[in-house]
Amino acid sequence: MMSLKTTIQMNKRFDALFAILGLLSLLVGLTTLLALVVDLFLDGADHLSWTFFTSFPSRFPEKAGILSSWVGSSVVMLVTTATAVPLGVAAGVYLEEYAPKNWLTSLIEINIANLAGIPSIVYGLMALGLFVYQFRLGQSIQTAGLTLALLILPIVIISTREAIRAVPATMREASYAMGATKWQTTRDHVLPYSLGGILTGIIIGLSRAIGETAPLITIGALTFIAFLPHAPFSSQFPFVSFEWLEDPFTVMPIQIFNWVSRPQDEFHLNAAGAGLVLMVMVMVMNGLAIAIRYRFRKKIKW
Amino acid sequence: MSLRIHEKIIEGGLFLAALSSILITAGIVWILVYESVVFFKQVSLFDFLTDTQWTPLFVDPRYGILPLLSGTFVTTFIALIVAVPLGTVAAIYLSEYASHKTREIIKPTLELLSAVPTVIYGYFAFLFVTPLLQKFIPQLPGFNMLGAGLVMGIMIIPYVSSLSEDAMKAVPMHIREGSYAMGATRMQTALRVVFPSALSGIVSAYILAFSRAVGETMVVAIAAGMQPNFTLNPLEPAETITAYIVQVSLGDLPHGTIGYQTIFAAGLTLFCMTLFFNIAGHYLRKRFRQAY
Image (cartoon, each protein chain N blue to C red):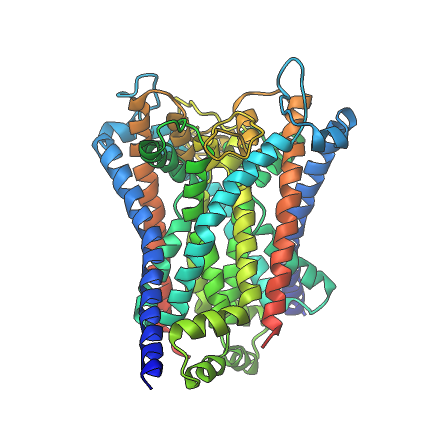
């Protein structure tokens, strides 16, 4: 009788120990994240001044800033969004609402799952061979934007599909019963209901794209850019210009990489400052995605 | 009538968008093979796979991929040593122990680990983790595989924990209840009932994490160095396949030279490795889905 009691007690003790072990392993990850943020903050916070955002990179660390790289990141993201969002959402809608069950559809599905697992640098090699040298798009903003768009396409497609799948069939049937066509049903009912999930996926994809370094280095992005791309608007006819698409560029992660790779400590501090800015951008995007997902899940009750 | 045509045009457009994903894969495979074929006309596949020197940019070039492979595998191995135990235990905790509320808060926070840009992890590995390690191992050089591998391991924890947790969550409740009814504790149920039932899903999580670590670029390019080094010693600097591609891309190699083609041969090697592991992972996951 006594031995049974001790066995139970021992098992309970092991159970509690294991729960502590689980918490500890979670803590290792979370502590590292905290250490990373604090380290960046301690090294970089002093650098965040107005001039840091409005200066070009420089040979002198105290004068160097991130003007060309944050502008570069913004315009590259513009091209990425304009390409990946329509393409990814359309593909997701097709696969979920239209696609017949045949070999071609399953080929496309397997292919998308596989694309999501290809290392980002391989996308860079593809872009270098195809966009830069075959299509002659140059080592430019358009090439960079397209490359990142292809990279996040699987994320957009997969989250679009998941969001659409969550819309119950009764919604569609009600719409069909009123005489709506398939596209009318999709456009007016399915897409609005799945907007939250789609938006979440797009933001997550873009937050991934804004932090990508390797594929853009591979296509030959320059690390030292002391000028801005052409302005998209002008005072002369036709007022809008797309010349900026062909301009060379640099982006925030490449600027950070460049500063980290230099031997001087002063440049490392610049890297921390730029890293902090990039980190805040990524965290804000992720926070936004979580908030949207949470809100939509609360709001919609089927 | 025009409505029907309108519908058809839209369906066609949506179909083309879906088809574009196949074009991307075709583009990747075509470019990698197209450039590598030129490379392998000048370097035999046997030399590529067995030579222990990788010095393609030297006067006397040697094209053995082994030093890059050793760098890739050592850093990946260290990352897995970190990520597999931590990720698995964290997944068990989240799936079997944590309350709904705790999980709702901790899981998205943990997933932020994989949202941090990799260049920032590179900074962290090079300027925080390596100096910290040097306090314990004074002879550790500034560039080393240990620091890079450790940071990469933390980075891929969410890949292990999320997929493993999904796999364990998919184990039906009545199987757990059977175990509890026999008087088992949560730990016994988790380790002896849930874990084995979800094993194929968990292993597929490990495989996908492996494939992610093999393809990771910036952490190793910044913190592990850019010197090909045929060694298995994690305390030494070494270059991975991905870091080599970055190194060549930073210099301005003219299009069409053999130096330019080496990055495509290296990329093809990387692509084949990750493709193999991704397919293995998906196959395992599919099998586990059919189990219940």
